[in-house]
Length: 131
Figure (cartoon, one colour):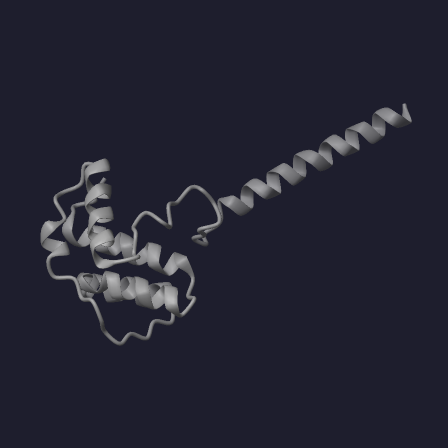
């Protein structure tokens, strides 16, 4: 009888642990630590690789042709970004700065989530994403 009680307690503990871990995945914080989002969808190793990766992404997801957005990219610019909101606002107002922003975030070891948010703004700038 005592072992049945212990088994019941262990099962309850395991159930609660699973429940708590699933709640942490469904948090409001954007995180590149989970596979639900692709924080590495574009290649920023060179401007040409970036353009190719954006074009490939657009084709894969049946988005509009990104040629016009890619034709006016900024290659160098002084930036100072302090949050994901700053990066999103920058790209909403200047989508041509996405490549420079990616370099800034990488070189200054800023969170990759900041770039993901900016990429979303970049995609919206040339493609209607009202799905």
